[in-house]
Length: 290
Ligand SMILES: Nc1ncnc2c1ncn2[C@@H]1O[C@H](COP(=O)(O)OP(=O)(O)OP(=O)(O)O)[C@@H](O)[C@H]1O
Image 1 (cartoon, protein in one colour):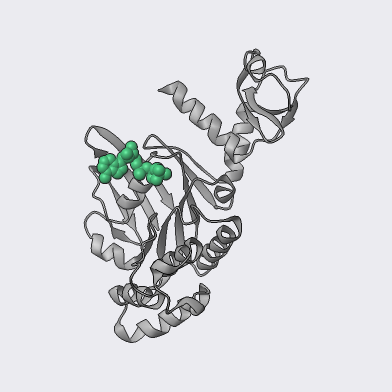
Image 2: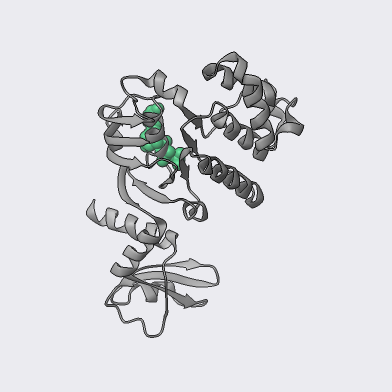
Protein backbone atom coordinates (compact mmCIF):
# COMPACT_ATOMS: atom_id res chain seq x y z
CA UNK A 1 0.00 0.00 0.00
CA UNK A 2 2.98 2.24 0.71
CA UNK A 3 6.30 1.58 -0.95
CA UNK A 4 9.32 3.86 -0.56
CA UNK A 5 12.50 3.18 -2.49
CA UNK A 6 15.63 5.16 -1.69
CA UNK A 7 13.70 8.32 -0.85
CA UNK A 8 16.10 11.21 -0.33
CA UNK A 9 15.47 14.89 0.36
CA UNK A 10 17.88 17.69 1.20
CA UNK A 11 17.29 21.17 2.56
CA UNK A 12 20.35 23.12 1.50
CA UNK A 13 23.32 21.02 2.54
CA UNK A 14 21.28 19.14 5.12
CA UNK A 15 20.02 15.65 4.34
CA UNK A 16 16.59 15.53 5.99
CA UNK A 17 15.72 12.09 4.57
CA UNK A 18 18.41 9.76 3.25
CA UNK A 19 17.80 6.67 1.11
CA UNK A 20 14.73 5.51 2.99
CA UNK A 21 13.15 2.28 1.72
CA UNK A 22 10.28 0.36 3.30
CA UNK A 23 6.85 -1.06 2.61
CA UNK A 24 3.59 -0.92 4.50
CA UNK A 25 1.04 -3.65 3.88
CA UNK A 26 -2.71 -3.14 3.44
CA UNK A 27 -4.53 -2.73 6.76
CA UNK A 28 -1.34 -2.25 8.74
CA UNK A 29 -0.92 0.42 11.41
CA UNK A 30 2.68 1.44 10.85
CA UNK A 31 4.47 3.75 13.29
CA UNK A 32 7.31 6.09 12.42
CA UNK A 33 9.23 7.05 15.52
CA UNK A 34 12.30 9.17 16.07
CA UNK A 35 13.55 12.21 17.94
CA UNK A 36 12.70 15.82 17.03
CA UNK A 37 14.17 16.79 13.68
CA UNK A 38 14.87 13.16 12.68
CA UNK A 39 12.99 13.54 9.39
CA UNK A 40 9.57 12.01 10.11
CA UNK A 41 7.51 14.93 8.85
CA UNK A 42 9.69 15.32 5.76
CA UNK A 43 9.22 11.63 4.98
CA UNK A 44 5.45 11.94 5.36
CA UNK A 45 5.47 15.00 3.09
CA UNK A 46 7.41 13.01 0.48
CA UNK A 47 4.95 10.12 0.69
CA UNK A 48 1.92 12.38 0.37
CA UNK A 49 3.23 14.23 -2.69
CA UNK A 50 3.51 17.55 -0.86
CA UNK A 51 7.27 17.59 -1.34
CA UNK A 52 9.31 16.20 -4.24
CA UNK A 53 12.25 13.89 -3.49
CA UNK A 54 15.77 14.61 -4.75
CA UNK A 55 16.27 10.88 -5.32
CA UNK A 56 14.24 7.72 -5.00
CA UNK A 57 10.57 7.09 -5.58
CA UNK A 58 7.41 6.18 -3.75
CA UNK A 59 4.19 4.39 -4.55
CA UNK A 60 1.09 4.91 -2.46
CA UNK A 61 -2.24 3.13 -3.03
CA UNK A 62 -1.00 1.92 -6.40
CA UNK A 63 0.02 5.36 -7.72
CA UNK A 64 3.46 6.80 -8.29
CA UNK A 65 3.66 9.74 -5.90
CA UNK A 66 6.29 11.65 -7.84
CA UNK A 67 4.64 11.29 -11.24
CA UNK A 68 1.00 11.64 -10.24
CA UNK A 69 0.79 13.47 -6.89
CA UNK A 70 -2.79 14.63 -7.57
CA UNK A 71 -4.01 11.06 -8.17
CA UNK A 72 -2.38 10.02 -4.90
CA UNK A 73 -3.99 12.85 -2.94
CA UNK A 74 -7.47 11.60 -3.84
CA UNK A 75 -6.66 8.18 -2.40
CA UNK A 76 -5.06 9.27 0.87
CA UNK A 77 -6.00 11.12 4.01
CA UNK A 78 -3.48 13.39 5.66
CA UNK A 79 -3.65 14.91 9.14
CA UNK A 80 -0.73 17.28 9.59
CA UNK A 81 0.91 18.22 12.86
CA UNK A 82 -0.61 21.68 12.99
CA UNK A 83 -4.15 20.22 12.77
CA UNK A 84 -5.09 20.64 9.14
CA UNK A 85 -8.44 22.31 9.77
CA UNK A 86 -9.73 25.78 8.93
CA UNK A 87 -10.38 27.64 12.20
CA UNK A 88 -13.00 29.97 10.74
CA UNK A 89 -15.13 27.21 9.26
CA UNK A 90 -17.47 25.12 11.40
CA UNK A 91 -16.75 21.46 12.08
CA UNK A 92 -19.35 20.42 9.50
CA UNK A 93 -18.05 22.92 6.92
CA UNK A 94 -14.51 21.63 7.35
CA UNK A 95 -15.67 18.09 6.64
CA UNK A 96 -17.87 19.14 3.72
CA UNK A 97 -15.03 21.09 2.20
CA UNK A 98 -12.63 18.18 2.40
CA UNK A 99 -15.17 15.60 1.20
CA UNK A 100 -16.15 17.79 -1.78
CA UNK A 101 -12.54 17.92 -2.95
CA UNK A 102 -12.50 14.20 -3.65
CA UNK A 103 -16.06 12.84 -3.73
CA UNK A 104 -18.95 13.35 -6.16
CA UNK A 105 -21.29 16.05 -4.70
CA UNK A 106 -24.18 13.63 -4.17
CA UNK A 107 -22.05 11.48 -1.83
CA UNK A 108 -20.88 14.33 0.39
CA UNK A 109 -23.85 14.73 2.81
CA UNK A 110 -24.02 11.05 3.70
CA UNK A 111 -20.25 10.78 4.21
CA UNK A 112 -20.14 13.89 6.38
CA UNK A 113 -23.07 12.66 8.48
CA UNK A 114 -21.40 9.27 8.95
CA UNK A 115 -18.04 10.72 9.94
CA UNK A 116 -19.62 13.26 12.33
CA UNK A 117 -21.29 10.33 14.06
CA UNK A 118 -18.30 8.00 14.04
CA UNK A 119 -15.90 10.56 15.43
CA UNK A 120 -18.36 11.81 18.06
CA UNK A 121 -18.42 15.26 16.49
CA UNK A 122 -22.20 15.66 16.02
CA UNK A 123 -22.71 17.89 19.08
CA UNK A 124 -19.96 20.20 17.81
CA UNK A 125 -20.88 20.29 14.15
CA UNK A 126 -21.93 23.95 14.15
CA UNK A 127 -18.99 25.15 16.26
CA UNK A 128 -16.15 27.03 14.60
CA UNK A 129 -13.15 24.71 14.47
CA UNK A 130 -11.02 27.49 15.99
CA UNK A 131 -13.19 27.38 19.12
CA UNK A 132 -12.65 23.68 19.81
CA UNK A 133 -10.37 22.42 22.56
CA UNK A 134 -7.14 20.70 21.47
CA UNK A 135 -8.61 17.20 21.80
CA UNK A 136 -11.68 17.95 19.70
CA UNK A 137 -9.65 19.78 17.10
CA UNK A 138 -7.44 16.70 16.75
CA UNK A 139 -10.54 14.55 16.33
CA UNK A 140 -11.75 16.87 13.60
CA UNK A 141 -8.33 16.72 11.98
CA UNK A 142 -8.59 12.91 11.98
CA UNK A 143 -12.17 12.95 10.75
CA UNK A 144 -11.22 15.13 7.78
CA UNK A 145 -8.36 12.76 6.98
CA UNK A 146 -10.86 9.87 6.74
CA UNK A 147 -13.96 11.59 5.34
CA UNK A 148 -13.40 10.71 1.67
CA UNK A 149 -12.76 7.01 2.41
CA UNK A 150 -9.05 7.04 1.66
CA UNK A 151 -7.21 3.75 1.25
CA UNK A 152 -4.20 5.07 3.13
CA UNK A 153 -4.04 7.65 5.93
CA UNK A 154 -0.98 9.59 7.07
CA UNK A 155 -1.29 10.94 10.59
CA UNK A 156 1.55 13.18 11.72
CA UNK A 157 1.69 13.21 15.52
CA UNK A 158 -2.07 13.00 15.92
CA UNK A 159 -1.97 12.96 19.72
CA UNK A 160 0.72 15.50 20.58
CA UNK A 161 -0.43 17.74 23.41
CA UNK A 162 -3.45 15.63 24.32
CA UNK A 163 -4.26 14.25 27.76
CA UNK A 164 -4.15 10.45 28.22
CA UNK A 165 -7.91 9.97 27.83
CA UNK A 166 -8.04 12.01 24.63
CA UNK A 167 -5.01 10.12 23.30
CA UNK A 168 -6.75 6.85 23.95
CA UNK A 169 -9.87 8.03 22.19
CA UNK A 170 -7.79 9.01 19.16
CA UNK A 171 -6.15 5.56 19.09
CA UNK A 172 -9.53 3.84 19.31
CA UNK A 173 -10.58 5.83 16.24
CA UNK A 174 -7.36 4.96 14.40
CA UNK A 175 -7.88 1.25 15.07
CA UNK A 176 -11.51 1.42 14.03
CA UNK A 177 -10.39 2.87 10.68
CA UNK A 178 -7.68 0.22 10.29
CA UNK A 179 -10.31 -2.46 10.98
CA UNK A 180 -12.24 -1.06 8.01
CA UNK A 181 -9.20 -1.81 5.88
CA UNK A 182 -7.51 1.59 5.83
CA UNK A 183 -3.71 1.43 5.91
CA UNK A 184 -2.39 3.88 8.50
CA UNK A 185 1.04 5.46 8.83
CA UNK A 186 1.35 7.38 12.07
CA UNK A 187 4.26 9.36 13.47
CA UNK A 188 4.69 9.61 17.21
CA UNK A 189 7.10 10.53 20.00
CA UNK A 190 5.22 8.48 22.56
CA UNK A 191 6.55 5.00 23.27
CA UNK A 192 3.26 3.68 24.64
CA UNK A 193 1.74 4.61 21.29
CA UNK A 194 4.59 3.06 19.33
CA UNK A 195 3.80 -0.13 21.25
CA UNK A 196 0.30 -0.14 19.73
CA UNK A 197 1.56 -0.21 16.14
CA UNK A 198 1.76 -3.45 14.16
CA UNK A 199 5.21 -2.47 12.90
CA UNK A 200 7.65 0.34 13.58
CA UNK A 201 10.29 2.24 11.68
CA UNK A 202 12.85 4.20 13.67
CA UNK A 203 14.14 7.30 11.91
CA UNK A 204 17.37 8.79 13.13
CA UNK A 205 19.15 11.65 11.38
CA UNK A 206 17.14 11.08 8.23
CA UNK A 207 17.86 7.35 8.00
CA UNK A 208 15.64 4.39 8.73
CA UNK A 209 17.71 2.53 11.31
CA UNK A 210 15.24 -0.18 12.39
CA UNK A 211 12.11 -1.71 10.89
CA UNK A 212 10.26 -4.42 12.84
CA UNK A 213 7.34 -5.28 15.09
CA UNK A 214 7.65 -3.89 18.65
CA UNK A 215 8.07 -7.45 19.95
CA UNK A 216 10.84 -8.32 17.49
CA UNK A 217 12.67 -5.06 18.23
CA UNK A 218 12.64 -5.88 21.93
CA UNK A 219 13.73 -9.47 21.40
CA UNK A 220 16.61 -8.36 19.17
CA UNK A 221 17.80 -5.81 21.74
CA UNK A 222 17.53 -8.39 24.52
CA UNK A 223 19.68 -10.79 22.53
CA UNK A 224 22.46 -8.21 22.18
CA UNK A 225 22.40 -6.44 25.56
CA UNK A 226 21.30 -6.81 29.16
CA UNK A 227 18.99 -4.23 30.66
CA UNK A 228 18.88 -3.62 34.38
CA UNK A 229 17.21 -1.73 37.17
CA UNK A 230 19.03 -0.41 40.25
CA UNK A 231 17.42 0.93 43.43
CA UNK A 232 16.98 4.63 44.24
CA UNK A 233 20.08 6.12 45.80
CA UNK A 234 22.43 4.23 43.46
CA UNK A 235 25.49 6.32 42.54
CA UNK A 236 24.86 6.89 38.83
CA UNK A 237 28.42 7.89 37.93
CA UNK A 238 29.96 4.94 39.80
CA UNK A 239 27.51 2.62 38.07
CA UNK A 240 28.36 4.00 34.62
CA UNK A 241 32.06 3.52 35.33
CA UNK A 242 31.67 -0.23 35.94
CA UNK A 243 33.06 -2.56 33.27
CA UNK A 244 30.51 -3.61 30.71
CA UNK A 245 27.94 -0.99 31.65
CA UNK A 246 27.19 1.10 28.59
CA UNK A 247 24.77 3.65 29.97
CA UNK A 248 22.50 4.34 32.92
CA UNK A 249 19.87 6.98 33.60
CA UNK A 250 17.45 7.95 36.37
CA UNK A 251 14.09 6.29 35.83
CA UNK A 252 11.00 6.17 38.02
CA UNK A 253 11.99 5.13 41.52
CA UNK A 254 15.56 4.20 40.65
CA UNK A 255 18.09 3.88 37.91
CA UNK A 256 17.77 2.02 34.63
CA UNK A 257 20.60 0.98 32.39
CA UNK A 258 22.02 -1.12 29.64
CA UNK A 259 25.09 -3.32 29.71
CA UNK A 260 27.02 -5.59 27.38
CA UNK A 261 25.61 -9.11 27.35
CA UNK A 262 28.68 -10.45 29.21
CA UNK A 263 28.69 -7.80 31.98
CA UNK A 264 28.59 -8.96 35.61
CA UNK A 265 25.29 -7.68 37.01
CA UNK A 266 24.77 -9.95 40.06
CA UNK A 267 23.83 -7.07 42.35
CA UNK A 268 21.39 -5.57 39.86
CA UNK A 269 17.95 -6.65 38.74
CA UNK A 270 18.02 -7.75 35.10
CA UNK A 271 14.78 -6.73 33.38
CA UNK A 272 13.29 -7.11 29.90
CA UNK A 273 13.71 -4.00 27.75
CA UNK A 274 10.95 -1.50 27.09
CA UNK A 275 10.64 0.09 23.66
CA UNK A 276 12.25 3.18 25.10
CA UNK A 277 15.26 1.05 26.11
CA UNK A 278 15.36 -0.41 22.60
CA UNK A 279 15.43 3.02 20.99
CA UNK A 280 18.10 4.20 23.42
CA UNK A 281 20.42 1.40 22.33
CA UNK A 282 19.64 1.83 18.65
CA UNK A 283 20.51 5.53 18.91
CA UNK A 284 23.63 4.63 20.92
CA UNK A 285 24.71 2.27 18.13
CA UNK A 286 24.10 4.95 15.50
CA UNK A 287 26.10 7.50 17.48
CA UNK A 288 28.96 5.02 17.77
CA UNK A 289 28.89 4.47 14.01
CA UNK A 290 28.90 8.22 13.21
N1 LIG B 1 11.21 23.38 4.80
C1 LIG B 1 12.37 23.14 5.39
N2 LIG B 1 13.46 23.94 5.15
C2 LIG B 1 14.66 23.69 5.73
N3 LIG B 1 14.90 22.67 6.58
C3 LIG B 1 13.88 21.85 6.85
C4 LIG B 1 12.58 22.05 6.29
N4 LIG B 1 11.77 21.06 6.75
C5 LIG B 1 12.52 20.28 7.57
N5 LIG B 1 13.79 20.75 7.63
C6 LIG B 1 14.91 20.15 8.40
O1 LIG B 1 14.94 18.77 8.09
C7 LIG B 1 15.21 17.99 9.25
C8 LIG B 1 14.07 17.00 9.49
O2 LIG B 1 12.91 17.70 9.92
P1 LIG B 1 11.50 17.03 10.15
O3 LIG B 1 10.53 18.12 10.45
O4 LIG B 1 11.20 16.14 9.02
O5 LIG B 1 11.78 16.17 11.43
P2 LIG B 1 10.72 15.43 12.41
O6 LIG B 1 11.32 14.11 12.69
O7 LIG B 1 9.37 15.46 11.82
O8 LIG B 1 10.79 16.31 13.69
P3 LIG B 1 9.60 16.66 14.76
O9 LIG B 1 9.37 15.44 15.53
O10 LIG B 1 10.23 17.76 15.55
O11 LIG B 1 8.43 17.11 13.95
C9 LIG B 1 15.39 18.97 10.37
O12 LIG B 1 16.76 19.22 10.51
C10 LIG B 1 14.67 20.21 9.89
O13 LIG B 1 15.24 21.37 10.45
